[in-house]
Length: 593
Image (cartoon, rainbow, N blue to C red; front, side, top):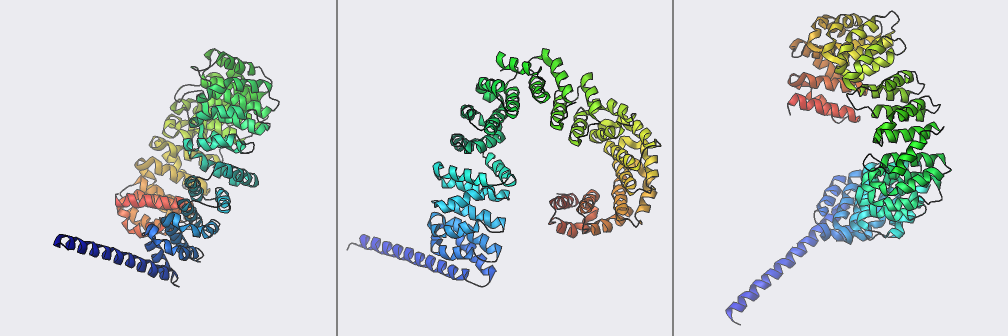
């Protein structure tokens, strides 16, 4: 044999030998890891599963051992085993039975990882597919999203999945269904092909319309499909289809004639309401057809206040014809007198939204708002208060007038709270209301919150706020501290009284006093020395709102509160997410990050 060929033969022999050795070593390593999975030590099992994850499909011989590990009493072992099976992928098919069982585990993290693994393995049987679809209703959002993604990866034929979906949704309750539908709606445009098929299915179309309504304008390509659903025998399905068309908006203009037909011919009030909503939401000044305009205008004369107010809303918000504003406003104001709080609520929203922020509402709208302030429905009153506050500084004159009216005063104070600094001109009126002999402690408390929301411009209120620090009412004392703290350094005259609160028996008094002091005298080392131990201790208080206040105050102190960092780091893992977030923010403020 020539020397060159002999050399090549030698190299090939060595190369083949090294590859064989590597393969043997790989097999030996996987074998050791399989053995480690059988350990009685959970930490050893977790390390073994994680190591197998790094080997991907090469860890296929460990499938049976990993499937067995899914029965471990230790959550971390089950999580690691599921991820290792996902890394193996299709070669781990024999673990599907165990993973399907894990979809019902009591720990959401295990359920989510099991769904993820099934999606990576794919090629599932009907039994697993049915459990997967049932898991789309899981109460945990992470599980639902993993199931959604896994079902997409599996690519199961829709003729199999649709009947299971329908049966599952029919048997579920509302608390389960709505979160699941919202999760599906997150798919947006990606969900349209599936929804198009679902709209053809007699039962699935009901649920599909709900999802399409959540997707909104991006679902415009499904307009022809929704038009077909308007022929459905079930009035609720027709109603949902109309709502979906309305949520799509101008992109569903092709459905206008069909919507008008249903508006005029439907026996069901709810379906007619939905049709009026859809027509008003789809048509705009640029796209309005004469037929749509005429249909909405005709509804302004209906004795049905609900239907009339929906039509008026469409006309007013979409500006189909400015000449119709006066009549539409009149209908909406009339709807404020409806016995149905839902109709009153819609009328208030319409009147609020038709007036751009910063502009002056018409006299009719203002008068309507004032009349409805005594409404029995807190939702309607809240909507009015929010609507007035949305006008910004231009609402302040009405706040001032409202403060002079004893019946409207409580509502005017709430508007002032929402306006904040924009209500600065109302400070004298707030003080007059505070000094009224008929002002009770509850009203005084709210007035002081309004003064605090206004901030430094409430400086004229300092004497009365100092007076409130001696009130017998704890609520009045606390809100006075809040207002003084929001006013800031200008409230220095209150420092002696605030310091006196630090020795109070009432925990709230002490915390409220500290909260105000560190804002009235920022950087005062004496006050910080008093405040930091008290606030650090409060981080362990059983009441979450106090822990939040303590963390917030330590963050306000800044770098000088470094001694509180260990306690804040512990609080950053608090079971209350609001407390944890406040602690993390305080850590950033103290550390300067």
